Amino acid sequence: MTRVLDVTGIKKHFGGVKAVDGVSFHVDEGEILGLIGPNGCGKSTLFNCILGQLTPSEGEVRLDGKPITGLYPSQLNRLGVSRTFQLLQVFPNLSVRENLILAGQEHKGTMLKRLFGPRDAGLTAEADRMIAFFKLDHLAEQKAGGLSYGQQKLLDAAMAFMAGPRLVLLDEPAGGVNLTMLENLKERLRAINRELGATFVVIEHNMDFVMSLCSRVVVMAEGKVLAQGAPAAVRANPDVIEAYLGH
Image (tube, rainbow, N blue to C red; front, side, top):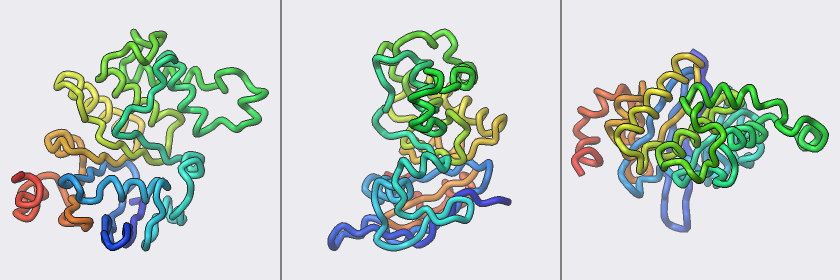
């Protein structure tokens, strides 16, 4: 099986504080990996080390076997690495379709094409495909700022998958979403994995969401990997129950 992402021995120190302390895991092609752990365990710091917002103190990150440690987010975008943030990154004054086109330009559009190419950079068809896939057809012309929070979360996820990225990292996609919309989001994420072969990592506090969506789960505690494996095995692990699920 092809490994898309390899994270090896990542450490991140802030002075004497070891926020991430030797974390290693991998993501296989076509996999949905969950990354969970209690608040303050180092998940977000690890994500930011992988995605170029922070430079690791030690360790290596590889994409398709090639080192990407320390690359800027813009460079990772061009290599096909996409992400969402805990805080929504939609553009409220642009329509749903315009948001998706703009997201696609981050991956495919060069400055020359933006200056001299078509206004939509040739991405309208792909944007409409994502709109249909995430069942946002009836909202395509609406400004993103007028959508409900759950609808904005769907749009945010759709933007991350624009232009067929190699790897997507979703940062708390379930946060603040009501149960009905949460089921819609989960169903769409399953579908994009099943039908389009999308590979992605989900960092999340909602345990039920992660356990029912992901094929494999990595649990962090105190900056280290506490356990990893199939959701059922992780849920039953006494160390995980004590560190996280029992809280």
